[in-house]
Length: 136
Image (cartoon, helix red, strand yellow):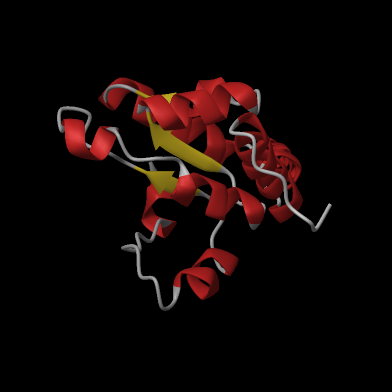
């Protein structure tokens, strides 16, 4: 397809990732699903993209599947080459879908992974252990 003539791939670069993301329409996070070490990693990279409103297509790792399901974006996890082709083409072909997915991801990340939400979860952990803090 001629649309793939305009595709540029970027490797993850911690120093320039936010600049690169601002110039992109879609993020793709491919993970080798046969490697238990990498499939066990958390969804941090996905959440970084979502916080910037970037739509994402990912491999079907447990963490990515859970996050996508919770954000009601479960169709965007891929297990094989056919799913990758289908989902990437669908996202390329539909600008309004990319926008909708980016907005939904951002809202999910801001709601469930904001600093306040994360601190509240830590408070629950410490409360369950019987610790009380003066900041409340």
